Length: 636
Image (tube, rainbow, N blue to C red):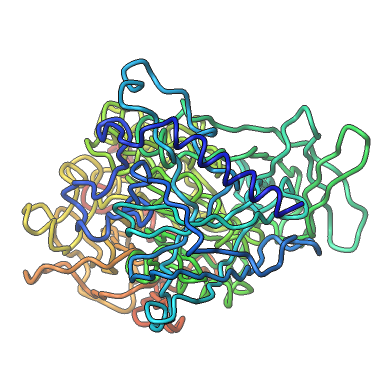
């Protein structure tokens, strides 16, 4: 039966090709390649899939080339959400440009292309209009391929709500010629609920669970079954969202990068007891009454605000994604992503929450990459709250309301991020929000929207700072993606600003007035710690221990989550305390209301390379400092 399907598929390819021209308007179908933006080197802006000119594909099926899945054919038969699949290749005329793409749905010809417009019909529709999920050169780890014309490749497939096939191309990624198509493989349940993502709710006693499945509400009712570990479980309903091609703002998200994201479900687990371990599993009740279950997970609920206990928060930005099977030239794009992921997983018993402050998968309009990312971080997101901020690679797009011009999101304009991840914002399209965790109060900004004085976001930031009860929650943290504080990065230095223009100008009065302890940023792919500072002047000469009044905010760039690193300027910036051109993250440990430990750890080994402590009493927060005094009277 599989052989018959294979022959039928090849026949469809041939018939379609005979009736279609593959010469298509580059203006209509070309994918976005290297995007121009002053804040990124061209090399690191290149989404690997963007180099594939899939619209140029010509059909060149030949008996002298073959591609075949060795196994397994049925994936996830024991409930696994990923499988390693081996394929065999044979080519009588091998070259170093031969490559293999993974496609899903398995039938990837023009039958799944969107309808063409009248203007586009004169050029003829493309034979292929959808980029592969991932790709690998045929000579990967086999230098003898061009001599023998034979090799085997292994791909790691995740459950992405569809079947898969492998396509064999010659001509490189610039002028692909389809020379072979494999047999199909599929997961036992492609619609299974997968990749849970925990997030803090709008109050301390709520944990939200978001996940992805292939079940719409007319097929199954989504819910979470949860409760104390080892005790009776209860069920909470979930809402269901999705987004469509026309939700995207531009190409490639609307064209070659589009892939159906499935259905995204969110449930709110309420009235949690503080510091308790809960177990949970995802469920979908089918129309016949049966239930499709996920595996079981667990999490620890948040402390009561102000409660003294050991509380550990990880913060970093610009993570990206990598393929564990070596696909997509992963070593050249975001070489630190898996290091960061795996180091956090190893230490997860000592982490209570994670904040990824913008630039998550760098999907850049290739929607399938969001699935790949949620799968990569699932061991983290399924166990601890995983809070995100909006970065330029999530949001920025021309004429879409972004504060910045540019095409960094690849046409996504924020939609996948705000749908796939929950944040406790009043409006998730405006990605600013407050979050509490024990003795920490977080104010998360959205640098892709206006933060300047008088703006809606500015008013939120001030309200968020003002609402912090510093007696109970002494550690006040601001975080946002782009650098609104200080950076010694090379491009900022060339602009003479050492920040995003107008960042400090508008916000430093709030940092000072409300005595913000720490401000974190990504966007710049390195690590830098700045002295406690106000109006460009260091207000404390200490470097390893700070105590007494809060007379300046410590700014930290922590954008080394995984994407290609950025160089520092050779200018000696007087406020910089510690710089590191490497991959890493920050860990904050609050021991009580008077003592905080700050650690910068490298992703490669998890060891501490920069640290300091803060010790102070409540009276030190209340103390009057320059531009940070409560109004007083002369009453005696």
